[in-house]
Length: 82
Image (cartoon, rainbow, N blue to C red; front, side):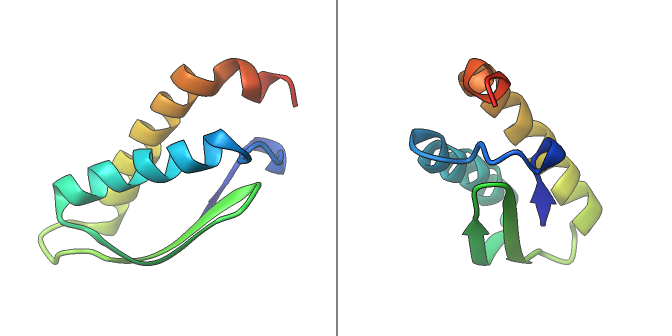
């Protein structure tokens, strides 16, 4: 699980669908399977199946870093207004 800064409720509308795509792409590349996931307006919750060759901390570091960068590049102005 991870949350938005200050729990701002910014994960809404078209951003919501795009975040799903952004998160799924690196998981597919690494061979990680999302068993269950919930995308709320202020947090992301996922139950994952991670291959034993990957450490969970490395997987999450990679996903959070990549997704944060992409989301800020695409929706930076929308997130600032909250």
